[in-house]
Image (tube, rainbow, N blue to C red):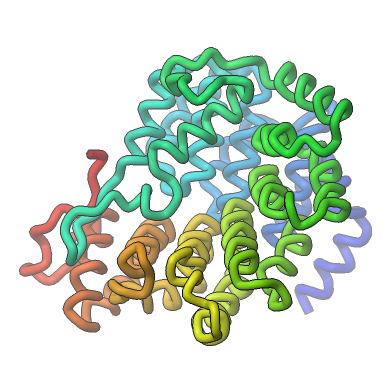
Amino acid sequence: MRNLLNQARGRLRGRPEAAQGEAARWWIDHGSPGQAVLALRSWALAPEPPPAGQLLALLDSPVPALRRVAAWTLGQGQRVQDLDPIWARARRERVDAVRLALCVACVRLGVQVDDAWGLLDQAARRRMLSSRGSRAIAEATGFGPDQMARRWLRVLDPWADGSTDPATVAPLPAALVRERLIRRLDADSEDRDGMLSLAYQQHPGDFERIAARVRMGGRREAHTTCEALGENGDPRAIDLLVPTLRAMDVDPGHGFAGRRAASVALGRLGLPEVGPILASALQVEAADYEGRPGAGMGIQFPVRAVMISALGEAGCVRQAGVIAGYLGDVSGSAFGGFYLPAMDALWKLDAWPELVAALQAGPTEATHAAAVLQALGRQDLLPPRQGEPKGLSGS
């Protein structure tokens, strides 16, 4: 009954993607995570954007996408007094896409580039102690130093070359970057690199341009548009990404690459509602694609690894049990199994109940669960004999 009542009230307030002011506030408070993000993105472009106090409060939202949009919006303002709470949140943030947005906002508000990059770089070098020794866990899940440096430069200066030191890049003004990229795309609408750089700016007004490329573009640029949809962050991208995630009528090589790209993008959106979609895809990937002729590519190019990682990035707490089921998988892919993305995802989700349960599983699962609990600072949940290993470090 409450859901029906909220739906009726929502209709009176119009579409969340066009909401501003009190209507947007209602969607943020009462809508689904996707509706709340749409409303916040719309409100961020209003002549009177959301109050700084509300945006700062949203930095503690359990929905990664709301934290990310709040960080972006704060970074567009000139309120240097907001810097300290944003920086404090960046230091304790676990979701990589959100941490990046927070650090960008801090630079926009006056933090030195080398300090902000130092925080990102430290997180990108995080390690966990596993049954196979200490492992660079962020690098194994697509968030290592090189991958993060690429994203950092895309946002702050898309024209920087590959030799640019991310700690010394000179950030261009956000409005200038977007203006130049739009002019570039107006001159050449098929410029994939330009479209991707525009998506990294995370501007709510650019979703339709990116979505148009999905609808019009061919197979050659499909993976780029998937990445662009994820980085732009609009919840409406879910409907555009799911067909690629579920595509069964393509050759194995292209199919695996497409499902991988779609999975990464769904994780970047930061919406817990993608959890059931990704969990179902995990089952299909193992039972169908990896079991059919030509599916060896699925082992060499582990799609399930990025699906597991995406569940952590998207804040899919309800799927923590599914993720925990991979803690003992040390041989399911050419990367040495799926246990590393599972550990990282469970750390991001703060999924201590599932980790405690895994302590009672096999010895491998118990070792990995104990390391994540250590990383979470939950030594109180460990049996005395499992309290010794250090779970997470920046080097």
